[in-house]
Amino acid sequence: MKRICKASISILCIAAILLAMTGCQIVIGVRQVPVVKYVEKTSLEVNALGTGLGAAGAQQVEEEKLSGTLKMQVFTNESGAHSEAWTNVVTAFEEQTGIKVTLIMGSQVNTQYSAAWLAGESPADIVWISGNGIADEEMEQSGMFYDLSEFLEEATVYGTDAKITDRINQEVITPYNGGIYRIPLMNSTQGMWYDARLMEKAPVNFDEYMQVAEDLEAQGIAGMTYPGMYSDYLMWALIMPAVAAYGEEFFVQVASGQPEAFLDARFQAVLERYKQYCDAGHLLKGSVSADHTTSQLNWLNNKAGFITNGLWLEAEMAEYIPADFQMRFCASPLIEKEQKPTMVVHGNDIAVSAKTENLENALAFIRFMYREDVQLEYMSKYSYLSALKDLSYEDAELTDVARSTLDYFTSDQVDVINCSVNWSSLLNNTFKQVINDLASGSMTVEQACQALHEDAKR
Image (cartoon, rainbow, N blue to C red; front, side, top):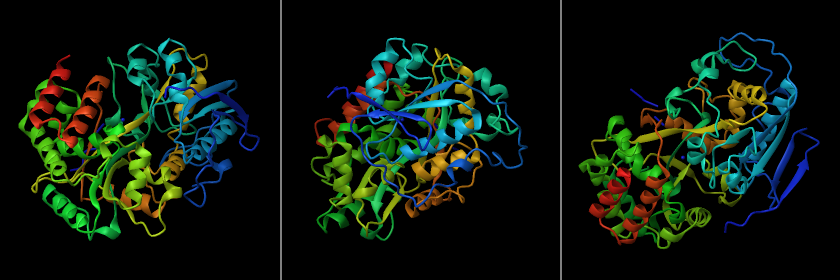
């Protein structure tokens, strides 16, 4: 039975741009890049978003018009591939509610506003907890996020009588001190990407993974690459899913940072397989020091057969993907023969500022983002999983790559575990370093497990 389980400090100056076509104000960094349209059209016409039935079997409800403003901090990657989803949804939200929205959007917004959030200021009413540079753990712990618990008890999907809690996958919600301070806009997972031209089928266990690496190297291609500067990609795409293959209970012990879990023979076995792979020379040289763009370009140029990454990879690299490249996705093969490939699902969350002066408007957007048509719009642009537990993706405008990934995810080829636990930043940093040290041969598995055990005890 499937279980669905819970990722140059130079500051750019900011330019404010009012988009007449969308009506919403967008503030972005000086560095501007064109939006890469990797689908031919939006899932619905922009002016139709938010006007259709929001939930199967739900009754439409006429909503009172609101007024005032709303400011949203939204990380989008440097390619601009995801910006269109936000402008489309915000435009529809403005038309339906009467609220005027300012989108503070770009690849540098988290870095730019991090200090303000940590100083107790409120740069935005809503913040999309995604991308590098956001200190969400500290923001949550310092009380900067609004507790949504009471709101969710009765809240309905905007324009319908369907309760939000009946529609969303609640198993990826990460509580904190008995409250709910963040809620998933979408769900996502990480795993292994490969070029299907290079192999007959993806490996499903460690023995097959090693054999494929040997076959690739006979063609002058390394087995795998990853961005060592962001080695948490590898942690959540390769190692943690292999931990999850031992079962949800053990996965939760590791993901929640229980010290003894890092000394467990099962965790040690996962790291032993990873180190064996690296020691065999299957890792592309330079991976340990690579940034995410370099590693992705190396992979697209077939310097390595596999790369660890998330569902955003196609959209982010759309303009660089060779015409004959056959991008495909699979779960971590770092598992034993008798185990089943496992994927870890987590929420990609939104939070409301505890200091917002526009609380009613912020909560209206939370309700709006769970409409089926709005969720399909995000799926079409991000290729992520919907936050709704029963939404069909048949009507989403998806690339062949995205559709094949969703087909794989919903098949019986994999088990799925939801992640709903907090992962501490201290432990995350130690884990990232351990991954690189194991890859470079400067640390043993025993030393790695001990280092994680010691940090987990702090």
